[in-house]
Image (cartoon, rainbow, N blue to C red; front, side, top):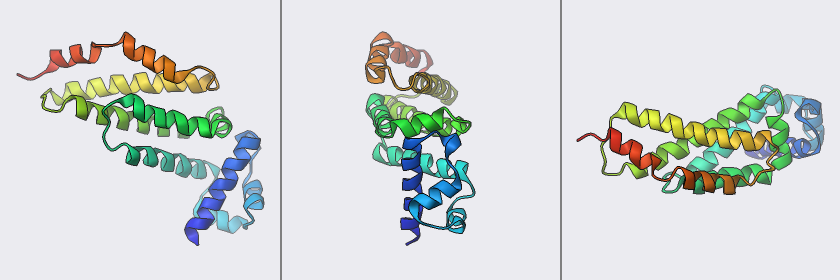
Length: 185
């Protein structure tokens, strides 16, 4: 029953986010929509930002579980993009709110997982200095995070998949070149 109630609260919140901006949603609106009392809401969530945090954390964990290893980071980022597009209005309401940082933490977590998993695949059988690996992961995570953040900032109007594919073409060979410079002999 507990999981059902929590999911009902989350479902009502997503529904309300598709109808109006986050700044116009109250706990009262959420409980009225899902037919529970305020105390029940506060049993599960401290406030609306904690509700958002819980929901985006669940989405991040879903992507991470779906892609425990990453051979092509584009596949995993596609999953993130699909998730955002499936809830486009709601995601944009969060992204353009005072609670943007919560969504950005989720985005960083997924980007970091994708790049770390991808690097594990790329480095299979190769030895590089751990600090060099960390620097490369930070750089690639920043590129992925930046591209997706820019896409969100522009209300998901760009063809992000095409842009990421083109970026991959433009930087072809860069990662291999970086790795060859830091490979331990």
